[in-house]
Image 1 (cartoon, rainbow, N blue to C red):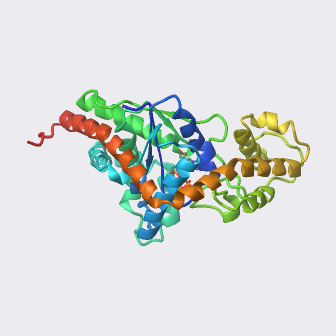
Image 2 (image 1 turned 180 degrees about the vertical axis):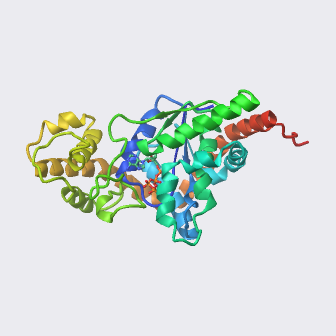
Length: 331
Ligand code: AQP
């Protein structure tokens, strides 16, 4: 049984939004709680993926998670497809989830509208993946799920499905709570501060990858869209670009956006401070990442150990769910 569960897709390089919204809280939690962290490769195939990109992306995601501070000796770090119980429990939960519930998911609406070319090629998996996510979470009996704000609706769905299962089949799953950070819960695109920073939307200039060149990171922050006013003030609705920079700086510095706003008179100074802080944050991570990706055999070994630990817990939960639903135990 775990205290904390969360996951990340191996779908390209990790960005600053992933780190500030979720990963830094994963790292903090491993010191005090029993944490299970999953590289959700089954989620990554909900959009078309070349096999080499999936393979390479999965190892790179493992290297990235360790480079930002996860320690496989202090948490359970594994790859979702290595533990087949995720797919099995997902099927059981799909059978008690309504189409209408899934149609309301805003991530499905966003992603499917970007994919839909009028030829009916929106994958069914993209529609049902929030149920797989629910299975991921309840498998480990985790009470807390640290995520960015974009995942709020999916965790609500997880709670609804877990509660429904418990009331129909008897107490089987822990009903989890999301843990969303007070600062940097939704880092916005630097060029389009109305949209969240994301790998699959927006322009390259709006996205900061943790492992890109420091000079490129600094350039993007210095070119971030602000507004035609000149006052440095934290006001996410009225000044979304400036407020995004203040959130980034506050999250990296361990302060608040309001405190940071009081320190700068000009947008240029705020941008320089944000650039310096982010480059200082990522530099040691980049060194560690380079060492880790150079040793794929060691990454595979760490992930195999993690899968072994995860499977021991997941198998017990699925067995409980099977019995609750009335499946005949295998002889
Ligand atoms: N912009 C963000 N601000 C704060 N937190 C964020 N997260 C994602 N974007 C932001 C959080 O990162 C964790 C991992 O999410 P994910 O596996 O959904 O990551 P992703 O799919 O790689 O995120 P993207 O870039 O947004 O991908 P697409 O475009 O494919 O959806 C989660 O806890 C998430 O909340």
